[in-house]
Length: 276
Ligand SMILES: Nc1ncnc2c1ncn2[C@@H]1O[C@H](COP(=O)(O)OP(=O)(O)OP(=O)(O)O)[C@@H](O)[C@H]1O
Ligand SMILES: Cc1ncsc1CCO
Ligand SMILES: [Mg+2]
Image 1: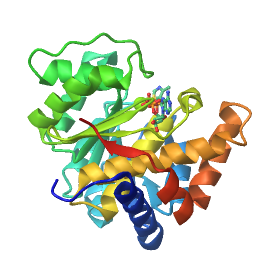
Image 2 (image 1 turned 135 degrees about the vertical axis):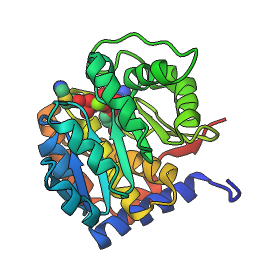
Image 3 (image 1 turned 30 degrees about the vertical axis):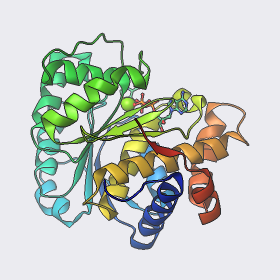
Image 4 (image 1 turned 180 degrees about the vertical axis):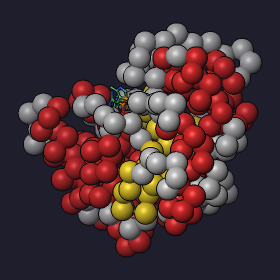
């Protein structure tokens, strides 16, 4: 990183990328879990992207090459869907992996490891998921497992995230109170967001879909795309929380806030910084 990446630089980049998504409406092919389909599609639409939830293996060779980027999420994995995921990931489009509850079963772990080998540009998970994935693909890493929700803080997974980035070549994004994004060398921290976002199912899946839309307009810098998408989504959560009474109304207000974000709000409130 040669230029100086100040807070103001990140604010401008986040606004540029959101503006590019709004202007270009990238077509985002999502093979995502059944729980997340609605909120992920609505988050993509509110940000200006065009979501398409397409799962049938017979459609992938025709459809995926016409898309701008691909989001693969294993949350409700099935034997039928895995070949579609593998085919979409191999279609030559930039793509993002969300390894939901990767340690739930050996089938799911093997599926995620086989998808990792297909070179995602970004892997976005919570701390427990990144720790579990690293424990199987990086020597010396360890993990304990609970379920789709994280039982670790994002900082707990930072070293393993760096190692995973180095061993896979993917940018690794660990979500949490602070989201960490690393390419194995540099680490940036994103401190936008509110804790209540964890009480809405599939906010993580939705932000993974948003990262995919940002990657579609910034395919040559996955780290910037991921960090800016996480900041924009977190900022929408902060603004949504100003009107919300609980998780259900936060879900609605977050999507409205994402749709309404303007330049002044983004450039003054995005909180991204290079970590020491
Ligand atoms: N304590 C927190 N404070 C602020 N923001 C948070 C906090 N925890 C999570 N977030 C934000 O919530 C979003 C979802 O992250 P989370 O880590 O909960 O994903 P997840 O566990 O994969 O969720 P899911 O599996 O339900 O989709 C991210 O944008 C993240 O930044
Ligand atoms: C709750 C749940 N179970 C499988 S996927 C999912 C959505 C959050 O990842
Ligand atoms: Mg998740």
